[in-house]
Length: 175
Image (cartoon, rainbow, N blue to C red; front, top):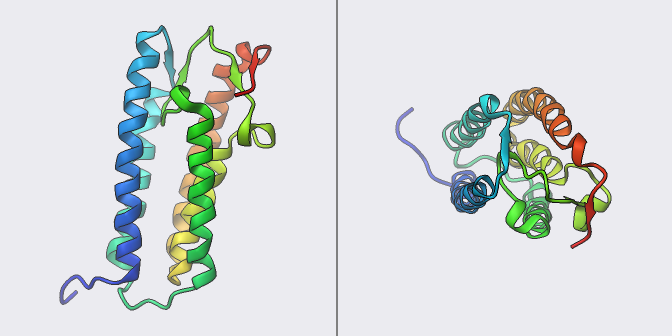
């Protein structure tokens, strides 16, 4: 590599990285508050794997997608509704939104917003995003590799999360 070239793929990756860091600040604040209220973290052992996966995805996109890669504009445009859906999830969950699995036994399950139709809407957004961003710049191999890795991790995480939430399925909330 003669030097790092900078183009639209790198700009998108940097924007996503900034977004993720801002989201982590909110998630960490919410996590601390939920734990202080008696919340229990479940699945702590697999959480670092998600950090590694998402960091590696961003790094691979930044480093291995050429700056002059052809742009598939409809896929770039798809990122806008994906981000809006992500923020709909965050807004719906409010103080309960976190990147970890924290269950607060006395809290009802949120079933408003996107949760009316999909049990794990944020995971749907992430699945679409992990495939869409590389495909938007012709990096189908990165889309495939990271989609498979994400699917394996998500399958485990959803099982852990569903087990943790099962006792609370009787209580509901509609914000």
